Amino acid sequence: MTVQFEAPGTANTDAVIRCVLERIEKGDIEHVVVATTTGDTGVRFMEALRESQVQLICVTHHMGFREPNQIELEPMLSSQLREGGARILTMSHALSGVGRSVSRKFGGISIPELIANTLRLFGQGMKVCVEIAVMAADAGHVPAGRDIICVGGSGRGADAAAVLRAATMNAFFDLKVRELLCWPKLP
Image 1 (cartoon, one colour):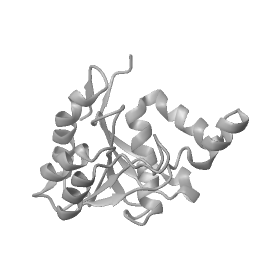
Image 2 (cartoon, rainbow, N blue to C red; image 1 turned 180 degrees about the horizontal axis):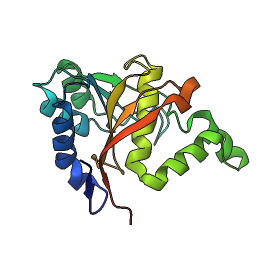
Image 3 (cartoon, rainbow, N blue to C red; image 1 turned 180 degrees about the vertical axis):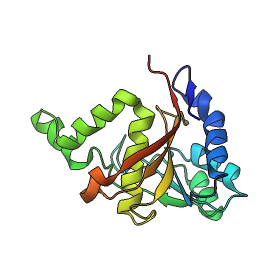
């Protein structure tokens, strides 16, 4: 069953956690991939998933996303995640990467940015779900061709979750959105 929230945002995080926990009960999911900027959302999921057998992968913004040479993941939360058994993944974003740099310097739009903007038709959180699935597969943290749960958000917190068949960047169109667990109505 898909849950739809009245609006995007952090206020949905606890409900997203409940949706993910309910879906995990089916027993066919081994990996949950969660977007986390500061680490707060990752820690909340880690605590909620503590009794499950799933591997938690927390995907952060890449180095320099907001400011040169800075990462937004808070060191204390990073330590908590690592001590709790979560994997932390920090790498270039699959749907922007060097293409964003070219667009900023020369104008226009890159193919990955076009894909990202098309996915945003379903909301920022759903775009993030697809992006982090690719990033986690590229890093070898989830197996390509297997169903995983991905959690994204619109800014801070979580407001979208989906079961995706993971794929690497070089096989992007093998990725499949298998189930929408929850997502917000768009304004």
